[in-house]
Image 1 (cartoon, rainbow, N blue to C red):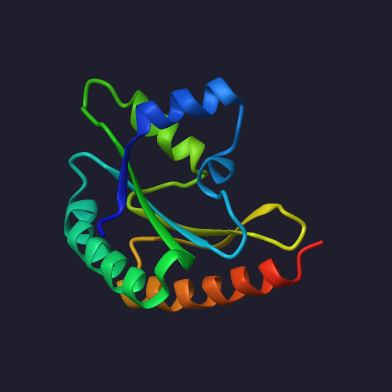
Image 2 (image 1 turned 30 degrees about the horizontal axis):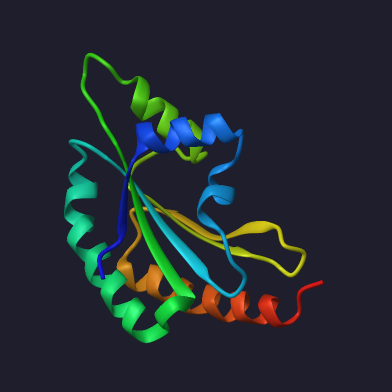
Length: 144
């Protein structure tokens, strides 16, 4: 199953309307690792990593089932109008594309990042997904 694709402008509207952080938008349940790829139009690294991320998504879904969810947030870009790109970087508190994040809900019910990297190898993301799933399951069984 491919990663869920979200247009950044639509996501930004939803976040602003509900006055929420991006982690609260994505992280819904205990016991699940949420993997988010943040990409931008006309980004060579994003284009190179997109098929690798989709392949990783399929592999991890078959391995961890409903314990992992994948999303890809994509920002539009043009030399004349960089506003959406800058808003996306600001929203996800990053400096470059593609950025990958893994988030879970901790034992107190707070949404927490367990991983963040700019253009990492997929093997690194895979290793961190395994750790995040283990943590998410542990927090699910030890929540307050």
